Image 1: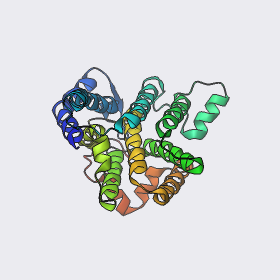
Image 2: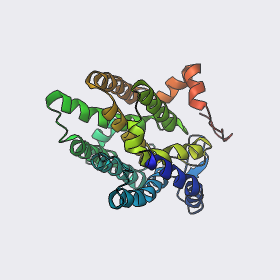
Image 3: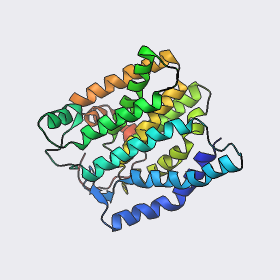
Length: 284
């Protein structure tokens, strides 16, 4: 059942470049870390490619009984599309890179308590609602249910924190997928979420070349895919380990700069810059 991955990647390969160029031409753009003007938010193009692939696949899966989509996608697609739209809300109504923009959970909490409008806080509450809906009815009780809920939410948020350099989110996601599939000798994440994974992998070609920026739309999309991949692949013990690691990274990211930490270690800096085409403008 890799039809979703193949068809969505093919569609993204055909149209993503043209759509991103059109976004830039029409002013849907933002300055990146190197002060280069790039298409923004690229995540909107990625999810559009996924939906273009899903349309024929869903019809054929049901009407022709071709077994093209994993039945469990019905559960998880609500979360994937929901948090992606919440990211788009943040990209559209948030204040971008302005100095007074709330940062992190603490910043958004302070903004709400002060009576301010925080799209980040709306995104957090909305993601909680969607995650609670997605993980319900799976026979998980007590602490197991809470751990699954927390893992899904924190994974989504972590990829949002990582999205500060071109291609970083996609490379971390690809490494995670490879690790899960190889260690578990399974293709389950690819079969279940392939219709969304295909455009993400194709989109990396444009973010690494600094032609596009994912935005919260894209980082939420990738984070949701990562969280679901962890949930459907790992056993109970491994989930707790993953949750502990992600929680530690999230707390670290609230108080320290993940980018500065990466840049201070040459091996991590090399991996982080691998495949990236420098714009030659600005500084890191």
